[in-house]
Length: 118
Length: 112
Image 1 (cartoon, rainbow over the protein chains, first blue to last red):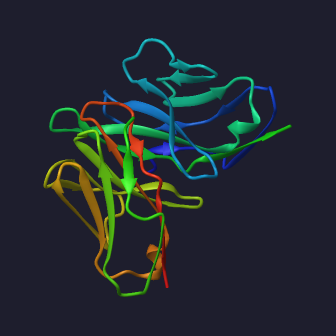
Image 2 (cartoon, chains in turn red, yellow):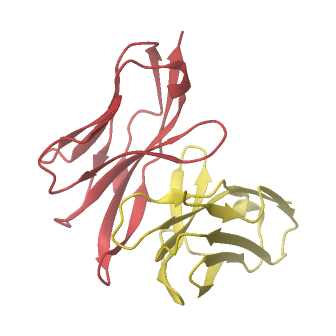
């Protein structure tokens, strides 16, 4: 079974508008964390935002916020005031599987390609 | 700044060759990872290591092996390259207990 599901292969948004990228996850571990990464066409992976399973408030980083709904097992990324430079592939990821202290692996979704139109 | 360096950006190898992909990080991170990225499939974990000489299979280890003899270096080995191993390979590292994983620039491997 997929651990991370991103149901939107592609999304389009107008410049300056907000956009939500969906992510649902599946884990039985009570301690986990959720990440979003951005991958522009150049290929590098850029960390955007992190939410821990025990965090009481939704994470925010500048124009990025994570809409964390624990009961629904969803961790959607909201980008406010989209810019042309936001056009990229976006990956949701989850850490789980605690090993020997605080080491764990990261599992990624299939990604959503966001295109920002002028 | 954390730096994760992969030895090659582009690589072309012949079927049956033994291929080494090298990854070096300069921040003394405990955890290192190898992923392959294919269109429509996202990033899939091949192997990860949480300490020197310690490794765990990821989701798609078949056809691959790894080596971590020193903390800063994590090598991915294709014992006998096949065309279905043509892909983008990404290395990442993370501090044990840390959150953010840092990625290398990727190696685009073509097996002909």
